[in-house]
Image (cartoon, rainbow, N blue to C red; front, side):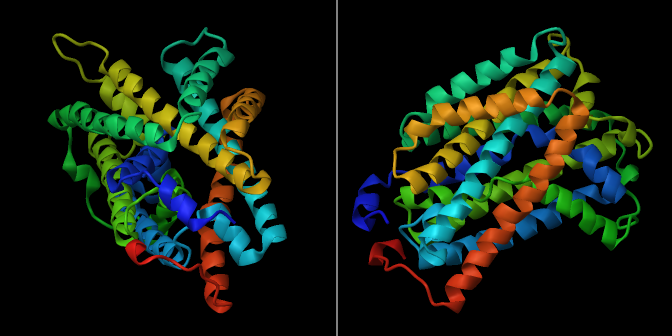
Length: 371
């Protein structure tokens, strides 16, 4: 295992940067179709599903905090080896690497599908994927501090997105939400499961926490703020679509957020949805960056080589996998596989690791300053 003192010297992230890292990992390709996906499960109570999902994610953040307290100088991949032993831990880390690179490939595929559908239908599918991959790899080959600073800057764009979408409230009908709870608790919970899958990326806290000089409580607060902002943002998007479109219209609209914006116009801007997509592309890029970076850290923990050795290989691999997904049906089927993998890797595995650590009283000594 890596020397804790050596890791402490490398710890460079501030609590704000940890928060930004989580936000930029979570917000990505899923937000455009989320309202229609949740409406299919929970109808007009879909916004409640998002809030419940946010609460569930917060409970997982608390679990991550307890893991961090036990292993203050170890990230998720180090924890796997400390708790399960080197053989089983490395095997699990290989699974993590496969999962994260598959998520990166899915992000590329969904990104390209939306861009071709809304903007450049005749452009070859590889062209924009190559642009995202090369831009992302150029950034993540540097220190995590540089990546985090870029993420902090990009978080300001969420405010721009909110300001753009809020114009839709000139044409809404809040009666579409009535009566509250009409879909039933079972359907609301079913929608919450979909919303949790759209919020995947919160596990980043376990991956980057040892590279932060924040105290453990500050890391908990950073994770809480990050996931809370994403929950509020997603609730805002879903609620906007629910009150803008009638209950009969939403099932017919695959990307409700974009159709809301397409219906808006200003005297000096005609296609405001294009502006939104431009900002969304940046969110997709940061999300892709995070998953490739996380996969490289997983391989770094196995082979003891710097993560920069793996990022070009992983970038090429994610690109090749994305090329295999040639139509929307294949992308959606692959997305279902990703959701299942996310449930296992990002929810099930951390819970399992914590239970094993408690049962066998496994922990790592920590300094006074980390408490």
